[in-house]
Length: 312
Ligand SMILES: [Mn+2]
Image: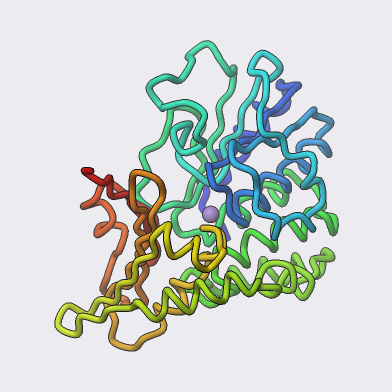
């Protein structure tokens, strides 16, 4: 159930992989479950194809994903001269990886640049762009790559892909959970994915500090009934007082976003000289990526983000 256009691009990718020897897989800064899951699954796929493949992320991947196979093989750095192909997964180009700005892209390296993504209204780097915003996740796209290349999905790859799909669909709750997502997930279960184990690792096991931070975030909610907005704000002071880290905020906005008749839910969190804004909606008529774009950000129709620099 994928477009002919996507199929053709997936075959072009295969032809480029056939002539590559050493392939680097990178993903966005602050990698999430889809970034890590799809990158690790690709590593398995490319090794199956007889290639040398490495995954690198500029930020340390969250511990919650340490149960995934080859998690410890994820590098923090790499040497460009070692690779003749780079695959950028789950974002539109170098600037989101945190390593180069798009305009600093070295045109002589790599020989092949491939971008795999599913984000809405992205500006893409030059290269082979394989992207479809109708897909739930990059993991779903990587699933199709396995299938189109005729490579069987083992239980390791199935767990990586299921993690990406589960996290990007909010555990099969978000509006991107299409019938096709369930078909793909069913195939992954049959290939040995352990959804129960994935859920245990990712969604359970909250610390007391994290619960305190959630309590504080919820306690500070302000509702504007006329506008239909909910907003909460977490400062560095809040983090310190709860003994929590920014990672502990993960997921609280989705709980905030459960209030009926809300058009947009905002969570602002202080990060050094700026505030990061996250915005969500369940309203079928609202596109929060447009809201985020007003502040120079972007993302998906139902989930987006932006940064607000502090003047002083
Ligand atoms: Mn994603």
